[in-house]
Length: 311
Image 1 (cartoon, rainbow, N blue to C red):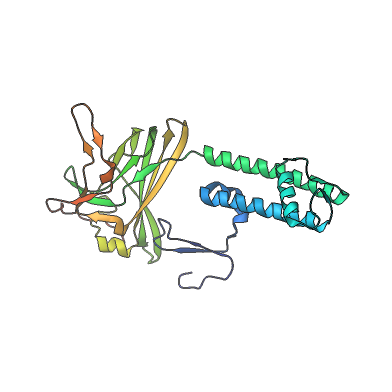
Image 2 (cartoon, rainbow, N blue to C red):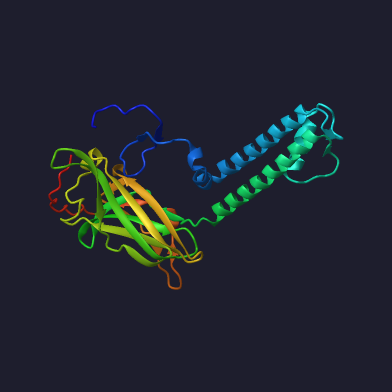
């Protein structure tokens, strides 16, 4: 209920995901990563993944080394009471190396070796599977412009942003969707977070290879008709871009998503030209991909807004 304090319990904070307009705290959901460990291990950064694997490896060997050390003189050819020898014996056992210098000599040590060998095989299989899944997971490398612009296109004020395929392979059957999300007031006077699909001049691309400038004409029927920068800012407006297609090299579906906040829209501007045509070949200058320029003339007057209840 509006204005009421959230109940106590498990909470999870999201850092202003696009479409929410602000930071969000989820209440009542399980926040532990252990409840979705596979997804967490699959989507975390490579640096964090390898650091977690390394720490797990050291911790496992350390725990088994404590077990061997507690058994006393259970390892043949190891210095009695040496935690160092126990640790490196654990490393050899976990990796099934078995140099033959150190070996278990008591029943307790042999049982601990059997348990560690089993866990070592399981751990190796799980880690190998995770590494393979992370490498084989299809992803798109799409570069989105840092800002969107509003300027004339074919004589109509239009919202524009551009994208580039950062891979050498093409994205075939690419489909693009643009959604405006903002705060509005219903006829009953209740605040809602409403989604509006914005029509694009071209929403499909047969073979997305280099760059693609998406254009939404701000016609009288557009949700952005008559919108002003300050009004969009007060409504916490977000633009969410979703691109899907098939990677030509992998023959698998890939997707990319990006978002623009109201402060990321440059009104009365245009993107800098990045294509330089030549007699034999053309050049695309990606160093200017994010550059915008002010319009030489004043932007066209926005059309009259359609009937929309804004906050």
